[in-house]
Amino acid sequence: MTPRSTNEAAGGAPARATAARRASGARRREEILRIAVETFATRGYHNASLAEIAERAGLTQAGLLHHFRSKTALLSGVLELRDSSEIEALGPGRPRGTAFLDHLVETVRLNSTREGIVRLYAVLSAESVTEGHPAQQFFRDRYDGLRALVTEALREACELGEVDADLDVESVASAVIAVMDGLQVQWLLAPRSVDMAAVTRRVLTALLADLRPPAAGPAGSGPGDASGTP
Image (tube, rainbow, N blue to C red; front, side, top):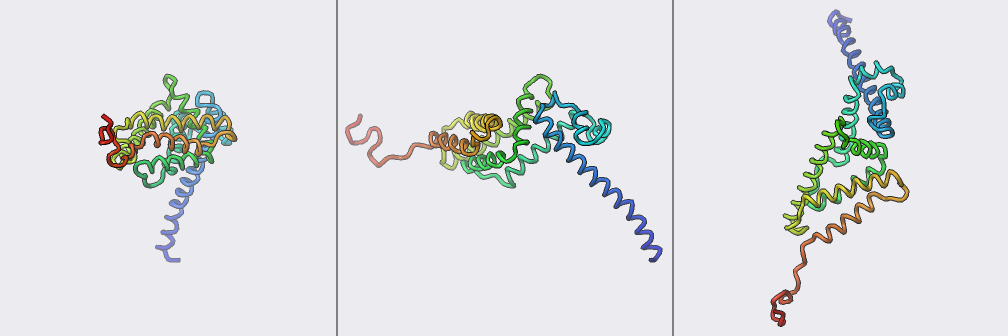
């Protein structure tokens, strides 16, 4: 081995060791987050303790704080993990108009296979309405964003002639979200009795049927035609 190759090998060893430590740290953080997701989903944010999460992760509380500087920071990591799952479910592109509502049904179907994520969302979103909860702004922003997304899709549906152009898109968007979130709670309490995707599909189908523009009748059959109707 030449002096140059010897120096390169010596210089590469610390870099490899650093990369290995970073990879190990990332795996450890992910493990802690998974445990925190389960703990927050089961006990809620306020009732879960750092000591409990640390013990379940095989760490001291100080060791846990090495990865997450506070309980609030750990909660932020959990919410980011949940959000990444939601983005993954949405996919790289968004269908337009009523096709987006079909896509929401598929997201609900996927959520029925991710009980831990659904429970986390249900527990923390309900807790977030309490004064001073650290996740309150996250859920406020999330609902604002989701309403805007559904509202935009409904406006597209109006432009495409799929629903009545006079539709109050904001209130319908809120109703769609209410159906999805309400079904999650019912499903968590009685998973064998509630098919979230099927019920979501049924409600959206009925909603859209009511919102579709009236079909044009045969020529001369409308109000004020020659049939003698005044």
